[in-house]
Image 1: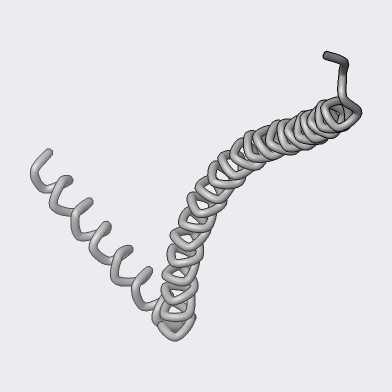
Image 2: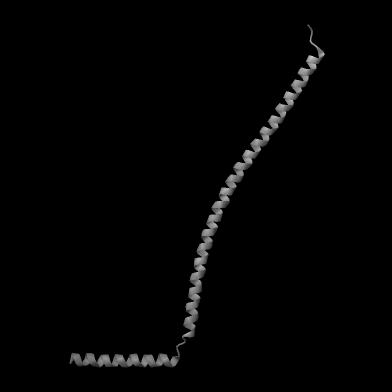
Length: 113
């Protein structure tokens, strides 16, 4: 029994198909490895971005609190500007205080004598 040409061709075709399948599998394996690598990198980047987002929200909240505080200060300043004390009021108040101090001094002098 000799080797038939059709057996040789079948084995040759079978070999070519197997090699083609191996090449395809190798190509798929490379692509899967690249996808896994890309996924890992993207997952890391996503984690970094989440962390950065959290920090930015914290800064934003701090700034909102600061803005609110400054707005309250502005309101107080505006209120204090509307309550304008005249120089006559200041003079009258000083005169009353001086008068009270003189009376207290007289009382102390009387107590000491």
